[in-house]
Length: 289
Image 1 (cartoon, rainbow, N blue to C red):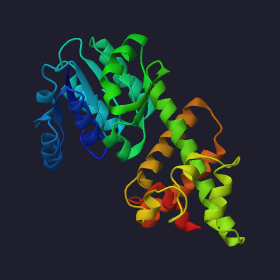
Image 2 (image 1 turned 180 degrees about the vertical axis):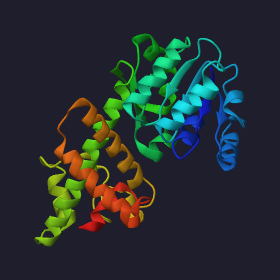
Image 3 (image 1 turned 90 degrees about the horizontal axis):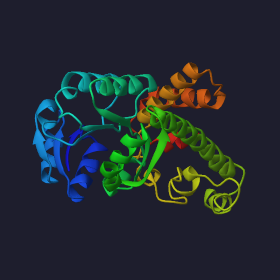
Image 4 (image 1 turned 180 degrees about the horizontal axis):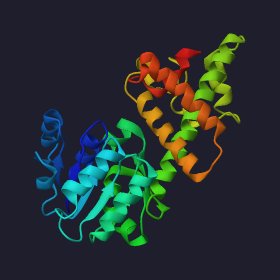
């Protein structure tokens, strides 16, 4: 299959490389010359414009920073430029309204499209073990699976167009909440006279079990290996967590949902980012305690 890949950043670069490993012909675009050079080294054909990259492809995959860029790229350079019948897969994490708007525009232009945001971070992108949450018709999802599976440990059909973004914003709001709670519990244990390692050994096998504690322990030298063991470098940046929390808050406002813990988590990450910590892994919230 011939696939255009638009956006070769921390996530997209590894994803495109895995498509090449699976035997697909990948036509890659990014604004960064460095990213294009790396993609070329990974076996992609590289292009300096989106319009060139989408010529003659069976599918277009995008991994872009925000909804405004996604809308601009598809409206200006993908719709009407990619071949009729090409499938569009936007793997960016964006607001629900834009995801639906771009998807409807694609449909009106005669294309099928899915929103397919991911969970798993940079290591999973490089390793081909991402989880994709896919919104779109049954037919579009069936086509999307062939494209997504080389990059994934799980490809899950969330529902109709936009459902993938709903799943992502809810998932990451929950992740932020239990990361903050995990950090508070570890700090409390230490200050109350129980070592964090011993608390980890107990809680990770008790009802306090959660991914942030068991698989991504935010305290250096405790439990599972994580960015905490590398001065909170790498992993999932706090600035990106804040972006996702703000998308969740906007989604909650639109849906009329009450999310008091989500709101509080957003305020905590806002303060953390304003203090200059946006580039640190989101588990670095531990350092504030």
